[in-house]
Amino acid sequence: MGGLDTVQRLPADPAGLRISYERGALAEETAPLEPFALFADWFADAVDAGLPDPNAMVLATASAQGRPRNRTVLLKGFGGDGFRFFTNHTSRKAADLAENPWASLLFPWHPLQRQVIVTGRAERLSPEEDAAYFRTRPHGSQIGAWASRQSSVIPGRRVLEERFAALADRWPEPGDVPVPDFWGGYLVVPDAVEFWQGRPDRLHDRLRYTREEGPAGGWLRERLSP
Image 1 (cartoon, rainbow, N blue to C red):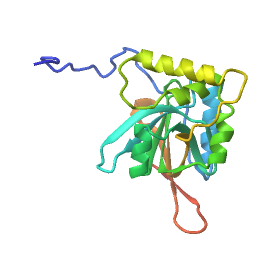
Image 2: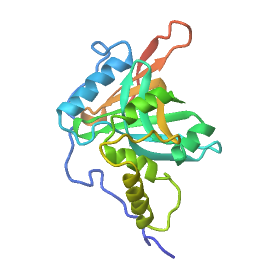
Image 3: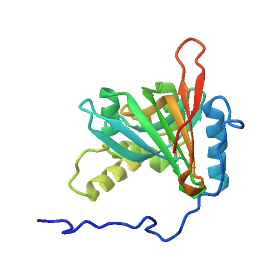
Image 4: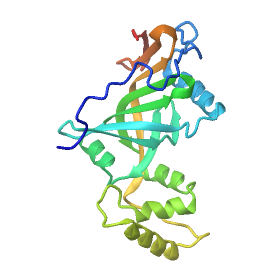
């Protein structure tokens, strides 16, 4: 029988850092009436703070049977319509979204004692938007998109490297690499966005924006108990 023989119980502060959560506050009186302006401010703070990969986010999807999966992907754009990322359409995440379009995004900005959770429906972007972004990628990343049949089983790394080398010979720099027909982007259109700011004594600030029904398309802003 594998695994640990006994339960490994962790202390309340396993790193011994005694985090005090005193880096900021989040008040309704100063928060915008809609979530995108606040997200833009917080994202700028993450960039200015020099956080590694500030656009890294955990994407959670679920299959038609309700089996959840999550992984880290990179945010590639955001605005009043939602949050964008790109991937291989043969990947597990794409298969999940084809069966069940609901998704969740988590931005874990721990050094700032902040996190943002976005929930909503994922929609495929247009081929024109896919191509516009693909052309901004480095040449190697463009080749890599063709070389990787994402989430498929391969016998070893050499298969991937040989495929990459063959494609690099086919489309050498500085020539153009065509956009794969199995690759593209998604727009997560949020119906809720929650902002979390760490505060002392576990009395954290949590503000949730929920999209209201109706043609006005406004947002309901609520404070949640930590």
